[in-house]
Image 1 (cartoon, rainbow, N blue to C red):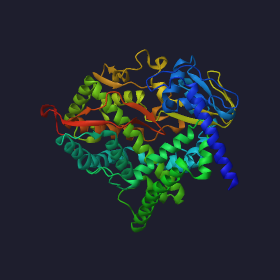
Image 2: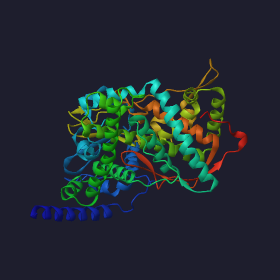
Image 3: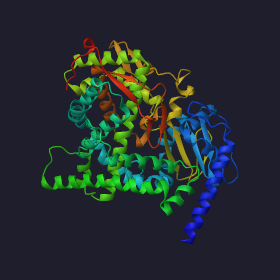
Image 4: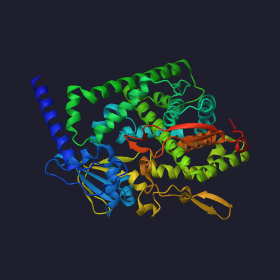
Amino acid sequence: MEHETLALLLFLLFATLLWYLASTLSKSPPTSSTATTAIPKAYPILGSVFSIAANSHRRIHWIADILHASRSSTYVLHRAFGSRQVFTANPTVVHHILKTNFPVYQKGPTLNRALGDFLGNGIFAADGSTWKLQRQISSHEFNTRTLRKFVQTVVDTELSERLLPLLAGAGAGNTVVDLQDILQRFTFDNICKIAFGFDPEYLLPSLPQTAFARAFDDATRISSERFNAAVPLFWKVKEVLNVGSEKRLREAISEVRVLARRIIREKKKELGEKKTLDSVDLLSRFLSSGHSDEELVMDIIISFILAGRDTTSAALTWFFWLLSNHPHVEENVVKEVRDKSEAYSHVYDEVKDMVYTHAALCETMRLYPPVPVDTKEAVDDDVLPDGTLVKKGWRVAYHIYAMGRSDKIWGSDSAQFRPERWLAWDQLEGKWSLQGIDAFTYPVFQAGPRVCLGREMAFLQMKRLVAAILQRFTLISKVAQPEYGGYLTSFMIGGFPVTIQNRHPQSINPINL
């Protein structure tokens, strides 16, 4: 008990000193719109801890500013007690990390220590054989037959029975709704249905505030704060004492796992009652493959909820906000939706051929990536293609947000929302076609061996939702300049308030639901 009291006193003393120094050294704390490109000063032992603390509220933008000012687009951040973290926005370096020298750059112990309580050994935190097993089994869920089923049954049912009626009701009542929250509910229901065969019924007219959603958000936030902490010692002491945010994290993870355990046990019961299932989902595959360790399966469920709910809803939130500020892009999307609806009788073919909408979604994620930064850890010494030395144990992060806004990559108009940059005119076909972009230049879906398995599923889901909403409604944004924030995934700070208007009847064609 004496040791715990002494540790707490030392922690409070160090925290107070850090707060004071960070406040005095940052004469005018920058906002998300204020660029601070000066290289942070590094002190003995403490490194750049004061600059890290002073910019914690705009961490993503701060590092992006530094990378944009760097000639090589790579920067080594000095953390406390001799630790180093390399950040890069250089596509050649990204190629090296994600493919050329892939075995050297793993998720690593630092990430697992910070995020492991929440993500466990799920696919996004796992390395080696555990990762390979999950990826191999998961890959079966992303074939053409499963994708068709996903669009025709899961997505369309959620659209016709829940999302569209909810938006129509909001429009009739001239009600302001948080579209970001609604989209998160939509994608949460979707991923649970397709991956686990479970309907959480989160997108209901009453918009229920569930303990699970709060717990999941808290666990995501606190785990991310752990990983990016200026001085990790702080949260480690709080973890030992079970106080503050660490106490809440423990409670939140417990609440999240209650639902995960319920999903597993219901699926086991279903598998036990039927010799063959009408449809085989991801969870059924894992449980039927002989890997029925409940803790691991819970980790898998949590990882897929994080990927299926938060990333897709983030992309769609920024997409609709950008459309509200670029009417000509919205007109082009609506025209394409109308044309494809007339040309195709099959929903799957219709959404696959929405080329302009696809380009607009790519452009959205270039400016506002669903995952702002992805981090690996070197398991051996290495030298990056730009000459940067990496020592074993250093974290190496490719900064997706900075890459998307780099003039070196996208040209002088990199800050502009221009879907046309993704399109090329096909002379033979007489129409626009998508222009391929190197995955290491645009690593929104990662690249190399760990490239995202759900990329095509995400695009199909997003395009189907866009078509359904824009044929019927116009969304009026109630926020002029929202702020981009991010933990493990990105989000619009403060939500996305909108009002709903029915689109002019002459511009509407019936959607094939």
